[in-house]
Length: 324
Image 1 (cartoon, rainbow, N blue to C red):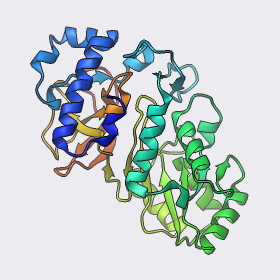
Image 2 (tube, one colour; image 1 turned 90 degrees about the horizontal axis):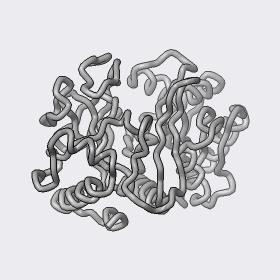
Image 3 (cartoon, rainbow, N blue to C red; image 1 turned 45 degrees about the vertical axis):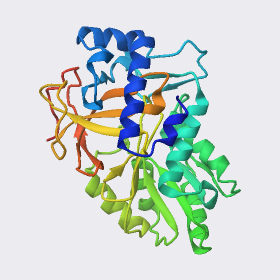
């Protein structure tokens, strides 16, 4: 079942898989089962994905969210400020994660072997347990390009590499955290023709937070590109959504975004209404596929979505808003 999700072709197949995964997790995930019981919700009551309960993401900080008796192969942890409690994602089948990010990348960007992959992820490289570093490290290997690699504080070397690759017509992907990409364009201005710039978010206290439009304007001008791409993922997920510009994200076929009412967490919004982001990630078969995040956003009629902020006080009801 957990590998067949990558063959989903349409909405009907997604719904059938989601309902089956819900039933599996209801029966095998103690924390999720307790949450559903508190809401008096049973699989026999559920006929569509909008009715499935979404587990508040905070539970990944305090509980072991797992739907399998298999041995844990990897534990991914979130980055947190000193002294803060970090999320832990217990992964019992790392091959599912690999299949998810490789097929997800190919779905939007085609063959990874066509790219040189350059990664500028200093704050992620400086700690252990990052699912993003795990993914990018594998993408670098799969690119089978000797020029691919990570960069920490060697911005001058990275700048030279970017210019040389682009000049040679090499298809290049530069994936980086926002503050590090800003550092790079402040040091050097570029005029890139064959390079995708992809930000993964995250000032992490290194710089003043910028709204997306301003960040992308500065990066676009600095790199000389018309669009800045983005990756949307998190420790608690095994799939990623991607934006090829303007902050409009698309999900792979085994992932879906809904929004919930900010005053009533159990009510799913109609499209185009701002609300809390709920993620269905069927790759999370062995943990929990139905997660209520602390992000705020909007889902469009065609299933694309955008992120517009975060909950200020991320309590379970999520009534207090920072941005709307």
